[in-house]
Image (cartoon, rainbow, N blue to C red; front, side, top):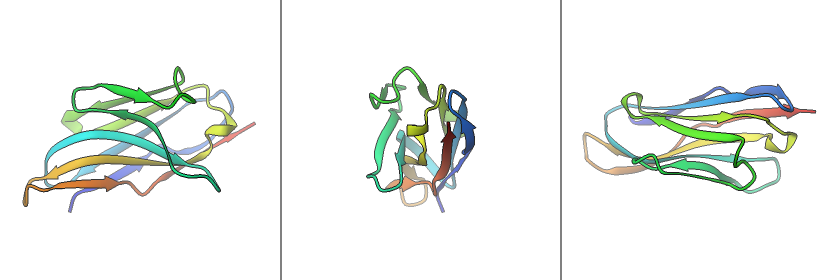
Length: 121
């Protein structure tokens, strides 16, 4: 079974930093784009950052200059380095990836279970 497992969330004061990780595990043939989304209470899920298989990145305007997305293809892992965090960044962060499984050679749109990031004032 192919799945995404996230880690790295927690409580941090405004101005602090956190690093999220998301590792894909299972019988994987290839991974296409990987991304981080977030959903704050009472709000819709929004795209935070994404990275293609060729390391092309894009960011939401609200996080540009503060967050950095990167990937380690050897580890099937995507990271989100979050600096200068603000209370408005408080949300559940979800990892998303397009994964081609090896056994049936089919593409899957996978989501992680979510990790809570809380930024206090």
